[in-house]
Length: 185
Image 1: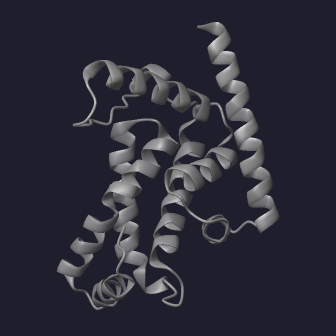
Image 2 (image 1 turned 180 degrees about the horizontal axis):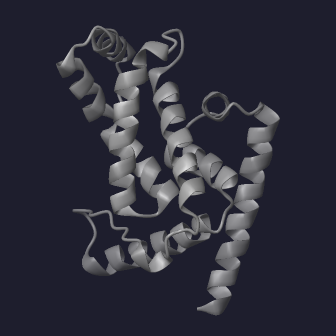
Image 3 (image 1 turned 90 degrees about the horizontal axis):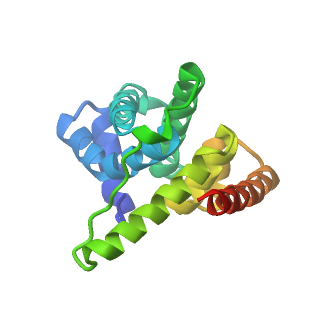
């Protein structure tokens, strides 16, 4: 995402007018965060890629509905979260954990530390996967995308108290799932 809201708004306005290069620049700005959110919600790299493409297609076809008085990131994440939740509902049951691949390369750490971090990420991802969809979405938006409570309210159309309650419950459920995983391994 960008630290230059003016550039972003210029790109949005140009995209609304049909400028393909402006649209491509918006995709470049958001492809990482949108893919990351889709991956965390859908637990599958291939599904996340498909979802990201569909989300950007929806962004392009529905960009006229974007309220320019609000943050663009809030709007695109709202589109993304709604799409991912719809996709989860259509595809029950969830993808087996064995199908998940999760690795973030680092130039600073050696293979041993990377392996430990990978195990920790896998453990947290498994705990996150145990959450009901509406709790998982709130946790992903808050902790992986660092959205404020207000932004989460706008994305999910929930009240502040509902967001805080769901986030609190999500943290408790993740802690319980981590306790169970620790006891069974």
